Image (cartoon, rainbow, N blue to C red):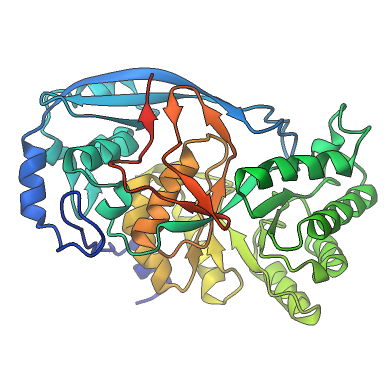
Length: 409
């Protein structure tokens, strides 16, 4: 089967489900029994609420765009059934899509093996939470619990704070203090935004500062993983120079150093071998075009996905980080076997809403093949994340029902 046939061919989910409210060692849950339980519930009401973030600290600019500051707001859809079950999560559902789902049986909208039906994709995450609460299972067990519930995670909130007006006086020490804030929360991995020379500084000054920041974080946090993300802010030649200067910093992952293309990535790999850099290379989040209609990779175009798989086939990239929402939660669980078949890991992009890393952690623990989750340190109004905790830098996914996020909206 060639690459195009592989991408166009459907991938079966093949999940293994644990028993109602049971542990990983429980007997597999009978799909028909679960579907019958879900058939007892109809969607009676869908409420729309607003939640707002408060990050652990101010988040500045990256190579592209302005500062994120302290967070964003989002819509949360809360599903209530005629039996009194309640579940909710982020959703950008349109009113017309919601109205058509009132009165439908949950079993018509959610299949234990395939996930959410296409007609209900607008409430994909809320339905996963609801089904988990009805069946007394955490979402990751709904998905098969194929990997550890101790999920590697990094803080993605270290941007160009050293270049903000109030940061210029402190420079790099300001950025290190913000790393320390996230370290104190339990993070043992940091993703550093680089590419200051694209818009914020001259090329020479920006590269120099990127190098200084990388080396400073490595010196201050010698036992933590470091990832770097240039948001395509470098040319391939410029990035080689950056990488040469930080080769002893033991980078865990390099994300989107420049616009992805075969020749530049081939040259980068040659240079990485030359300077003895064994970091993984991550690609896929940024897209130059959207699909005209959603397909199994959501709103990423087929051309974009084919380009990623072509790079993976030549071992030029190691990790694909298409966005959690642009692909879609159910679609991610369906296509993960294709990534496994291509020999490439996943790390779905989650920036910038604080609930999204928790959803992604369930995906990682449920279907496996995820290298590390993009964390967003902070809180959100009406959303209680306290069921989660850190152990040795890993986010421990709780065994509470649904996503384990209690809502008080």
